[in-house]
Length: 256
Image (cartoon, rainbow, N blue to C red; front, side):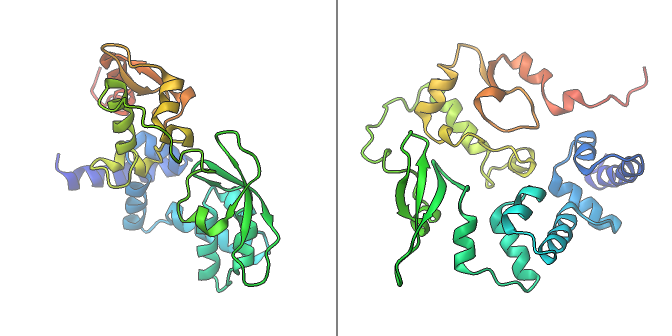
């Protein structure tokens, strides 16, 4: 079966699934495709895409005067996307509003807890809690948004000297898989498979949670539709991984 024939078959199956009341997420699982591919099928069929649906709902909520924070939470979108939709609707988002919406947001190892009163002409500063345990660390909000990773606890930290070990290689491959530039991003990043615990950006935290890789085992996600974090990961055999693949769970079309 060619790629075009498979796509056409999937589109026909999609129409049936939607008629039967399946959600977009459930249809993705049934067909074994990413959300991005599903949106492409819907566009070809003249159906509203998930992105278009969320944008429409965002427009409605913003028109009702809902806060950007509430729109972000209700639609499971980032606060930045909520601002983008507001701009498309003709609502300009002030710097003051963006600063207020930053409270509660995570930036690498830092979580913004409150804003510091700003002097005229000065950059907005805020208080952050760091994953290392530091509370109320004060920093420039723009610096944190631009890439500051921690309260400073990572600066001057000695190198662990463990790169090249089998456990380190597993950790490094996990990071590569979850990047948008990965060659097989449709099966990872585009499906929302990311490193959900920011602590795992540091190899030593990953090692502490998972331990050394046992001989003959590799890193496995227990639930294939969720990302990488301690409760969803284990060391598994190749056989266990094969049985847990999405294609292994699809219903067979072969006659019994």
